[in-house]
Length: 154
Image (cartoon, rainbow, N blue to C red):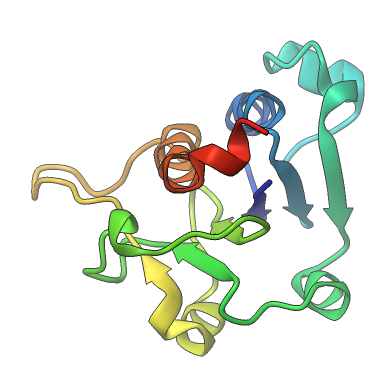
């Protein structure tokens, strides 16, 4: 139903949790290299996803490779702390791509600049600077599902 895109993920437990989330949400998971860990089934099983084989997984060699094979226009949202637009103000449609950056660097600045009108954020108090990647992914993905619940249940 949706496409979750992780740009250069670094922490295997986050990716394992996001993979589990995607299986249960019916979402595809796109991982864009470089990845900071081994994504073999044995490695991700240790990270918490013992049904990795059920995941609709796509691994891309680079951002350029991903963009060459996927048409990204208004059908994408980019989660970042570098905007004031709350994720719940976006209008998600079936098949949309939801991008998340690495735990250490976020989404590259040139991508955020190119898609500046499609940036979304999760509101937080001034006490925190960011949320865990897997938690952030769950928050935004399930808002997209909420908005498309009728399609989700089919």
